[in-house]
Length: 306
Image (cartoon, rainbow, N blue to C red; front, side, top):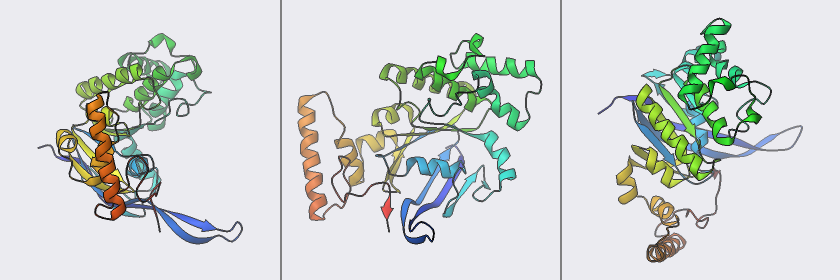
């Protein structure tokens, strides 16, 4: 069994709710992430799945230290990185990179593709000199399926799929150990999604990458992941191998989530509908208190409000 690359223990993030404009008073908190614990093993793809607002992206941002956790710990290669200061975070940035959801807003429209992909080199002081950096960027462009001759083009001159390839090349620039893909294909057409997923798999094989793959699309997560973690209302409700979670889910929320997925088979769709009705009835009678994936249940969103 592979050793853990990242260890997350009892991770908590609460966003305060305030009242007033000049004199603000805290009146509550949104429990966006509430006591999450898991390991990301070296060389694997761990998928995190759940409906919108369940805390997937917040968990990823806490791991990247883009947000400060309320409590809990994050360890990378055995080192506690939970409260590292800005200067001490710089080496971590070389090891952990992120691919964001929207390829239209995650790229600076005023910079060329060469400048965008080359930005990590400039920040980390690598590939000094104009020509060495240009060659390194063009090699990255070729690796992700882009034409190196488009080095001086701007993001608006590329399609959505090409823009996401630019974001992938930028994430690869520093040869990281871990790449966090946050809904990396959700904004793309289905045919383009398949191309990007295949590219990610090829890069993982060639560069021995570890992925944390976040999505609300169950089919995409199943295609990519070795293990799957299911989140609901800021909590991790189930984690296991992809086959185990899909074929033998233990948690009632996981069952409801899978039952909500439409299937092209009318007979199976009727079975899914009956299963959703059963789970909804159990949720209302209190025998299985779960927020259903179709929106029924306890009605809360974006974490638990306290």
